[in-house]
Image (cartoon, rainbow, N blue to C red; front, side):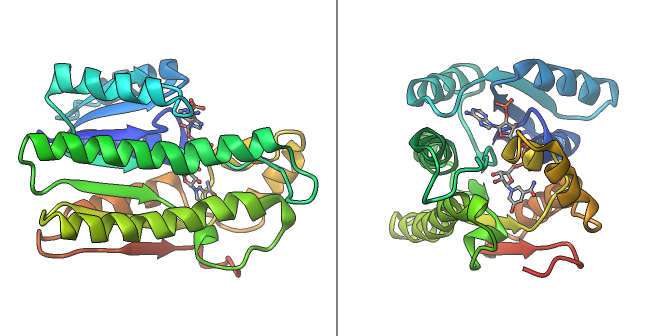
Length: 251
Ligand code: NJP
C-alpha cells in the first residue's frame, strides 16, 4: 500500500489487469505503453470504482532507450522512485527463422529483452538510492521460455522468452550478491486471452481467434492474481517462477 509500481504494457491485456489489481490494493501505479489514451481510460475507471490507489498514465515506446530513461527520471521527480517493477510489455511477430524479417526479430529483442533489462537496471538504481530493501522485479515471461516450441512462427519469440528465464535467474543472483533483499520473480503463462494473438497473427485474424476458441484460456486477471500473490509473499520467501497454463493446454 502506498508503494510505487511501474507496469510496462499497461494499455491492454495482462498489463492493464495487473495495473488495475495493484491500484485496487492501494498502490501508486505508473502504467506505460504507446497507447496512453487507453491507460488514461483505465485510470478513470479505477477512480470511479473508488480504488484506494492511483494509476498514472505515461506514454513510452519501450523500443527506445531514451524514452525509457526519461520515464524513470520523470518517475523520480514526481514520485521519488520505483518500489516494484513489473516488466510485462511483450510481443510476438510472425517471423520464422528461415524466412523472417530482421526488423521483426529486432523489435522482439528490443521490447521483450532489452526494455526488460533497461527497466530492471533503472528500477534497481532507484531502489538502491532510496535504500528500498523490499523491492520486487516481476517479469512476465511465457511457457515458451521453458519448453520446446511447437511452430515456426513462435521460434524467435520463444528465444526472447528463454532469455527472460535466464535474465530473471541472473537478476536474482546479482541482487543476492549485492546483499539486498530485493526479489526477482518471473510469471510464465500459457495461452491468455488478450490482444496478443491478434497482434502476432495480424494478417490472419481468423487464426488468432482460433487460438482463443480452441480451449478455455487463462484470463488476464488470472495473471494479475499471480502477481498480487507473489507480491504478498512474506519478505523471506523468494518465488522464482510461477508457471501457469490453461488446464486444457498440452504443450
Ligand atoms: O499482450 P497484448 P499480453 N512500447 O498484446 C505493450 C506475455 N505472454 O497482455 O504500446 C511500449 O494484449 C502494448 O502496449 P501498446 C507476453 O509475451 C502472453 O497478452 O499500447 N509498450 C500492450 O500494452 C507479454 O510479455 C501470452 O501497444 C509496448 C502490451 O505490450 C505479456 O504476457 C502468453 C510496446 C501487449 O499487450 C503481456 O502480453 C504467454 C512498445 N514498443 C506470454 N510493444 C498470451 N497472451 O497468450 C508492445 O506465454 N507494448
